[in-house]
Amino acid sequence: MGLTRPGEPLAGLPDDFVIHRFDVPKPPEPSEEGQDLPAEVLRQLGTHLDAFESMTCYEMRLSVELLMDTGRRPEEICRLELNCLTRDGQGKPVLLYNNWKEQRIGRQLPIHEPTAKLIIAQQKRVRARFPDRTPSKLVLLPTQNLNLRGERSIDSNHLSATHREWVESLPDFVLDDGTVFDKEKIFPYAYRHSFAQRHADAGVAIDVLAELMDHDSYETTRSYYRVKEVRLREAVERVRKMQFDRQGKRIWGTVTTVLDAERTRRAIGAVVVPFGTCSEPTNVAAGGGACPLRFRCVGCDHFSTDVSYLPDLRTYLDDLLRQREKLKSMAEADDWARAEATPSDEEITRIRALIQRVTDDVETLTEAERAEIQKAAATVRQMRQNFLGMPRIRQPLPDLRVERPA
Ligand code: SF4
Image (cartoon, rainbow, N blue to C red; front, side):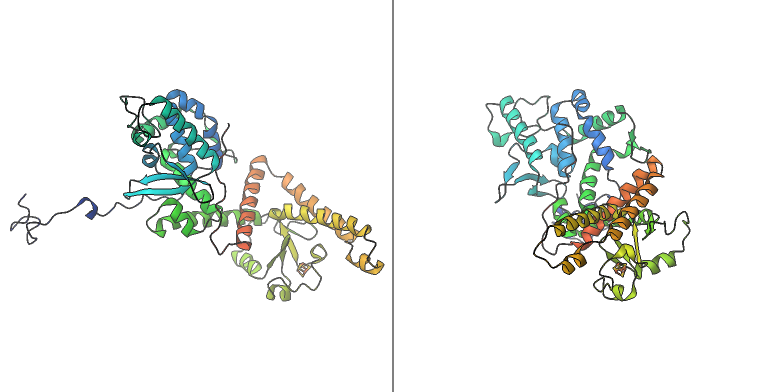
């Protein structure tokens, strides 16, 4: 092209200089922060898949189900080969796909049995539709048009357009707090963000998630954990507004303008005990292992709890009642030992009263507020579990497939 001649843009470079396709830097991953779909929206979409199928074809419907379940990019799903399912050493299903964006071929993704069943059923359909073709030449999602040999897949652009039409035709997506979700935010790529965010929120380690998403760098994967942090902070704030002392009185009650410094001081000067927090200095200094009262927290002014501990309080009460019954029939213990080990009526009464006070307080909220606080409490509980049980070795993947009607 003469571009290396003097005065031309590539002047000074040798004549045999060429740029190959792989020399061109890859465009950055699109910002993936906060683009996931709320669980309520995914559930509602799942109930309308029949309508999507009747607008298009079964292959299009299946592509959406696979996008939801696997978090792959639309093109990766649309272009799956017929033989895209294998099993690992333990017999668990694995999806074989190509990462077209990064030009990485033959990638593997562990999937769940219900997703594998969808693929197996579709493999049978395709074989029945193209009985004379070699399976290795067929695609999993063959298009209906001009496709005598079963080698042409549905098109991801067409999927995008039809998906938009479908979403626009559906009723409003109402969230648990009563707000309506913006339909513009529901597009095929959003299923990938949702998959990643679900796993980050569930405490899947960043190296495992980066591998699952087939990300090039941790920077992209990290964005999901930033969103998770913001959500956790919001959830903790919500739950903190429903803190109670040992008698079940709201600690901050309606006072929502508590100074941040006071909150921080309380957070630092407290340690988590089985169903709340303890601010007793020696116990805090010992990380919760030096309670002078042998954890009779409902009888101690250093104790406080919040709405997220309600299930733990109920479990504790059940344990006390069971323990009391068991000790009654334990003949092989001395009376004094049995008497000392038996939970006191006073403790049981106080725990019951505390549970009642917290429950009554939650009942005073509006339905939307209650839904919000329950969601926040569930998030905080999940965080607590993750903090307490953070695995140091590779963790098993949680089953986070969004349920759809059968
Ligand atoms: S009994 Fe009091 S000091 Fe002991 S853990 Fe409970 S709150 Fe802390």
